[in-house]
Length: 133
Length: 285
Image (tube, rainbow over all chains, first blue to last red; front, top):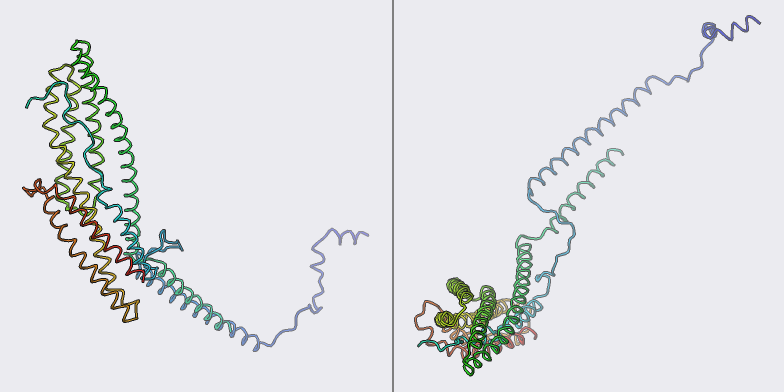
């Protein structure tokens, strides 16, 4: 009983009393040559990927830089429709039709009868007494 | 496999980048397009502002003219009553009404010249030096009218009213001269602008219509029509040049010919109307 108690309370006892000569459980060891060849293949692939990625990235960055430098003042417009339909978008005969119509409006406004800037109908000589001649 | 996949992804990214750049460039309008759009927008905004300003000035002018007509009637009644009664009370009333109608007349004239100034300043087709010179004359006249208004305000008796009436008689020829001169120039400027636009349209049509007409018979017909328009324009140009010379303030004989201008204006307007209808026909067919 005392031994059992001692065994329960003393946590170091189990470790100390491990059987030394009993073989431990372990995975079957892989052949050394196979392992080293697989590792070297993976490392090589990783290295290649790194080189290609670095080269591609640097080319991409250089091209991006060149494009940015080539167009320093380029304005990026984001699909904004033009406020008025551009004249150049119309077919040529329609453009002339529009211009002649506009001319017709201008001609109507230029009618000499319509331009009425004549002096107002005022009595410019009104006076209580006759003006001296 | 992984290298291939990485390369494909990389090239896809690059292709996407270039396509994106091209799309962006395609959306960027050329400098001339954007400037023409902004110029036309600013021009239409300015025209709208001028139209609003003119509408306000015309409303003021109409109001002042209505008040003047009423005051003029009251003045005539008071004047007639004074000359019939010859009393001090009727004289006081006549002096009061004379002063009032003189002040209202000046309000009408100032409202009128405000309209004239805005209209003239915004009329195209006039030589800028002529415009500047006449605008300076107009401003000087308006300043004199304001000075005269102060003199009328200060005149409270019969002799002082006779004095300001005499002074006004020296202003009235300038008023009539500038009013006629500017009115004629505005008419001329409008007609000249239509003439210039018509010449440009005719020229552009002549150079571009062979691109969209393939029928040789139709081409010849268009050419004959354009020749007729050109003949009309040549005929219109002569009276235009004549009027331009007459209305130049530097011309010493301008007053001698100004009476005949209405006939020339009618001739020009008739010729322009005819040419415009020809152009309408040419463009439609």
